[in-house]
Length: 119
Image 1 (cartoon, helix red, strand yellow):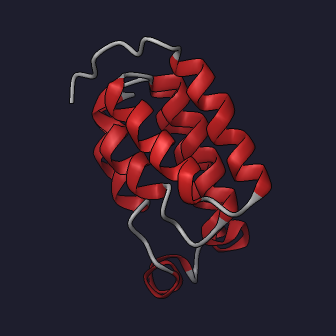
Image 2 (tube, rainbow, N blue to C red):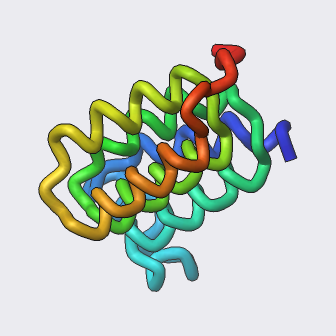
């Protein structure tokens, strides 16, 4: 639940080197960094706490399209003006077609009149 949110958000900051050091000897190693962070984005979207918007907005800059696309999905679930603005900015610079599609769908989920965010 919400009590796990800070730990999940911390995982979104892992680069490849830190992921390898932290999870080399664990079962999470098999998911690889992109798979783990994809799952983190999904979990944060399902928790539906707008406090996660800043971490997910940062994940829109991840080098992996898999992570960026799922961060966009999660932001669409959370909604709010901050999420909407982050998605618009990401869409304006995103080169990957799938991630662009996810940003577009997430923007539609936020609605034309996004509810003001709590963050």
